[in-house]
Length: 133
Figure: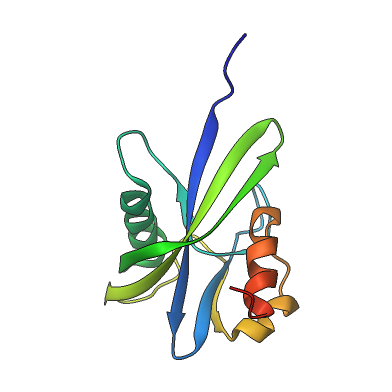
């Protein structure tokens, strides 16, 4: 029997001035035009923290300090099982820029419910919005 491979995905909960950074995916590919927390898939040979640093640099042009694990979730995208690890992060360098997303926004936690998130991010967004985490 073949063992299922779980894809590891990281996501950053970036906070600044009482707001959280969210990103809108482009209108093609998976989850078109939905909102997400920045991050991406772990590459072979890198830790989850290294993955998140790389993804934030590639997607947002910023260097982040990766803090504690904030939350975890599992989700099936088609036949792919993915484990999402959300980290509390801080921007420590670079200039925030939109490179792969349609839009990026700083929003207050209580405003998160106004946005439609990718399925794997929904629970974390809801819990943040309710002040549960």
